Length: 130
Image (cartoon, rainbow, N blue to C red; front, side, top):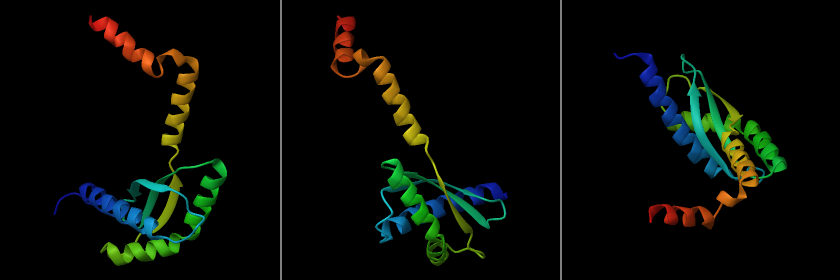
């Protein structure tokens, strides 16, 4: 048998994939647009952190995270039916704000250097190539 780390990585990816499908199937109107970015599985395979990216304004993101936390039991049960493990891991949702942070940085950069946004940079490339 091979080491546990590759197995944990494979199981984590399978859990991430199934969790994304399960979240799409949820009928809770409080849950906005959510993307499961990654899954981090404990070494004993008993706990999983699902890192989710939530799109929308702050109030909507908070409502979505609250609704997700209330749905952990359902998500865990659904995962147990889809992923065959001896113990279904306990689920914990963690908001991944890296995409929102990246968008914020891009917005700040556009504010500082507006001349590099849009068509002018293409025109400059054309002059450089001649």
